[in-house]
Length: 190
Image 1: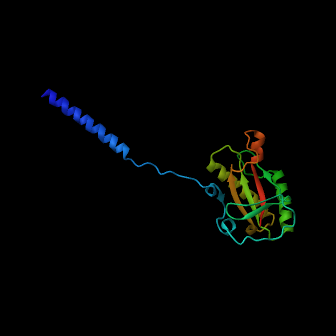
Image 2: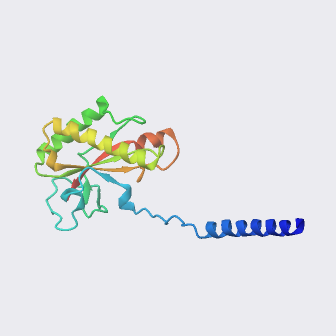
Image 3: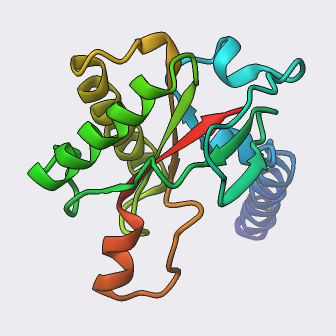
């Protein structure tokens, strides 16, 4: 009787182990996720300003450009020397007095060139999570936009986008590089 009980107990243990192994082997595996580059950007408006794929306006540029390119949204942009970049302090999106002075100058350019659409691009240094940096870049671009609107610039001529920590000016890990990368750039949409 005692040997039957041991055999029976051994069978139960083996059956239990087999059940656990089978259930673990049949468990659902999480689906693989991929992130496309356009998903890493945050835009204020996903309407016509940023999703335009055709019919790019070929408006004449009053000044020479130093950089031209097409974004992933199909909107060609050009850096114009008169539109200067502003910088931000670490983990901040408030506008310093120096940044406000630059924005006054940028507003003067926009008022002298009516009808030109300007895209404000917010950037961060590499510290912080991707999600945090995208949100911070968005806040930086919006702070610049709101200041320009307070100076009389038509908000319909301004769009914002955040690149977070993507596209750093200086990829090194120094305080100087971080300071360069905490910025908002202004580009004319063509």
